[in-house]
Amino acid sequence: MSSSNAIIAKDLTKKYADGVLAVDHASFTVKRGEIFGLLGLNGAGKSTTIKMLSTLVPPTSGSASILGFDVLKDGIEIRKRIGVVQQLESYDRNLTVRSSLSLYANLWDIRRGDILKEIESLTQKFGLRDVLDRKIRWLSYGQRRRLQVAREFLHKSDLLILDEPTVGMDVLARHSFLDYCRETVKEQNKTIFYTTHIISEAEYLCDTVAVIHHGRIIALDSPNDLKKKYTNVHVVSIILRNRADISRLSGDIDKIPLVQKKEEITDSPGVRIVTQDPFAFMTEFAKIVESESFEVESLTISEPSLEDVIVQLIGNEEQQSLDEKEKRLRSVSVDMRSS
Ligand SMILES: Nc1ncnc2c1ncn2[C@@H]1O[C@H](COP(=O)(O)OP(=O)(O)OP(=O)(O)O)[C@@H](O)[C@H]1O
Ligand SMILES: [Mg+2]
Image (tube, rainbow, N blue to C red):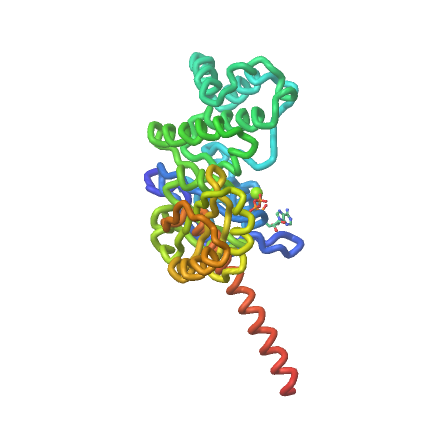
């Protein structure tokens, strides 16, 4: 297959039998050799998109081509060529890690002579060496997740579709998994389509991210370009001298209407806020400092993280749909009055 695209989705839509519109005209292209992240809140439509791309549920309308094959017509061809990790766990709990991986290697027609070497190397990469001969039922949740993900890296598929692969992995396992993904993509020219709730992880890993909200793709770009597009958001970090003043400061900041997001800084006595107007915020903040006599150690303005941008994007979408609802309600009440 010569196309430079691994996935082309056009107006992909899924309406479940009970009327839930889970995915609504989603269009995106994933280039070969790229790591593509689909981000969104619970219930946004990520897993449904993954199920359509991996041919587990058919789209209601629209189309998707996977490695040049059509999801509606070529299910078998697609399933032969892709590795999929679903959100739900799936394995024979009575097998050991070693036998489960060997079984998979055989299913995927890996050369007998290579199986042992592959299992050695993968279990090393995924931190499963110590539990190779343990039954899956006795593994911890994070170990089972690592096994489920490792299994899909065993076969030499060109495209991996992973639904929240890092859920349950501890911080070290997550970091080594992310680095492994990067390495594998580069060395084997694989393509990875994946979902996560950890936006900093997507910022580190992905070449492109799509934000899905109520089934609709509301943003699609590289993490850097997405941040550049929304440079109207800024982060102000305020560090105080005295940790005891933090909760008072936090309460005062809540009264400033310009603040879109606020969080306490963990490693120093401070607060980090996101605002569209940092200078107007500073004017308000100066008044607080004066009246409350806080001792400010430092105050810095910086660019937002991808997470800040996405929170802002989703907030804007929610506000827009609230405004539209209100407009509709107003026009209904005007109609009723005039009739
Ligand atoms: N089989 C189904 N029948 C009816 N509705 C469903 C079905 N599967 C999912 N949904 C609904 O479709 C919407 C999208 O669900 P989906 O599982 O795709 O979300 P998600 O983005 O993966 O969420 P999460 O982050 O919680 O995994 C939700 O409102 C969900 O309740
Ligand atoms: Mg999901």
